[in-house]
Image 1: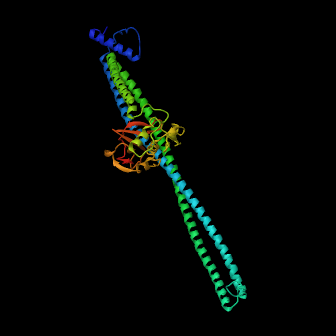
Image 2: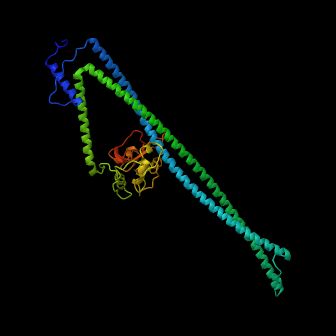
Length: 449
């Protein structure tokens, strides 16, 4: 048979090993592996054509790999944008609630001012009526004393003069009282006008906050759509890359034969061994964490936490006590995990509104309960304490991600030794993770110390 003359014991051994590799790779079992017959000996033109085809497929794989890397980078940016828009929607929700409260308070003040003004007007109307009666009686008698009876009962001219002076003073006091009430009514009217102006301003702020919330919700929906579109494109690129990689594998198999296939299998075994070793190492680390306060296996229920306190360790203990609690957008307060809320996008698709858990800023609210009352928005939390450079960050400091142009979209607590605790995103749970320095703010926020 052509090509058999150049074979020998080593070649037969190589073919036997290659066949064994194929059997292991495909999961074939049995008591023995039959040695296949010698493969055909292709011509030089066939070999060169196969090499050219394999090289072309390798080029396609490289091109698709570059495209996929760019697409994954873009998807990562879009993921950050979605997180940012979710936090901006959170901010708009908080601002709208605040504006609603301010408008309600201004409305109460305006109603109170109107009530006082109406009461003052009623009093001055009565005083004016009394004065009119007094003036009419005086006019009929030709004097300001209201009645001649005071004169008829006087015992002497001196007493008559005294009574006249007294009644004249009474008329003057009525005039003075009327003036005082007029001034009071004017003051109340001014307060009423001020209250109405405050109400107008508060209502305008409420309308602006509601418009901002609507705009933030639309921006979040647009970001989510862009993320979904990019994810679909990434899936297509992944499928194309997988298809071309399969073709490349087949082309390389055609060129290299059984020995090449065995080598790829050995490479796969080595990689798998490294992965098994890494998984074993991670499992060992996970088994050590409960004794080190690093959290154990995730649980669907929150662990009983330490009581609130003002020390760094009390704050850290409260955060670590919630390891394994599910992420829920809008969830969490000073008492613990709460039901999430709808966001019209990513969180809704994960059903966060039906989950009891924390989002990133909600976890910080709970951890720092007893130290400081924090708003439910990471951007406001960034300015809630003293700024320290990342080079000086220490256990218990808050870390933030975002930027001046894009805004802040995530917060976590630093634990030390390059580790942090965070409520990461929808679909995940409160966890300990290495500090991510991509997109991190240059300053940490310190509330204690």
